[in-house]
Image (cartoon, rainbow, N blue to C red; front, side, top):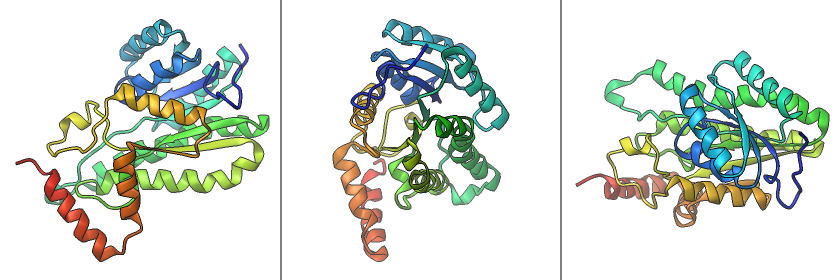
Length: 266
């Protein structure tokens, strides 16, 4: 199988490796990309859930294969990437979506837990990039997509560990772009706001502009097709967060405290 993607529509007919594909936004994104006829390598830890996603991918008009594994295992990710290349001849796009969230509680400060989150959200993405980048550079083509978060833009309450892992990913991808873009490899950073998933379902605070995963997946797919270097959404909330990023610290802290007070449950 060879890729039929075009610059105008880089997801159509592409060979895409998608991590964190078993539920939530990853699952919705798998189905959305399948509608363009993509071949999807689906990675997550639970093979049974990936089998369900594969059925949904095929029903949507795409093809795929199950590549179970833990993104924190670098060797396993290299094996998964090679298995996908063996099946379809190459990888046009990596969507490094696997990740999780752990609220930061200063009354139960747990360095091991926070570093585990960094290992999953940041190092896990690097392990997958490591598995595809050499071949992309050799081919002079490819697209690396990292799923970060608006929480990585600036410090927000209860998200110190999560935000730090996403900030690291944003910085890494934005910096790496300068090194790989001239060699034909594109880099896109995706920064969603709140998306309804099993993780956000655990939040006890109000989540402004909460999006359903299928809608978020459509936004990401359209952004990729338009060649966006950065995909941030939802627009009102992402614009607000971006404006907060440039404010002086004292003003930012004051506004964020008031914002957090409005988000707390009654």
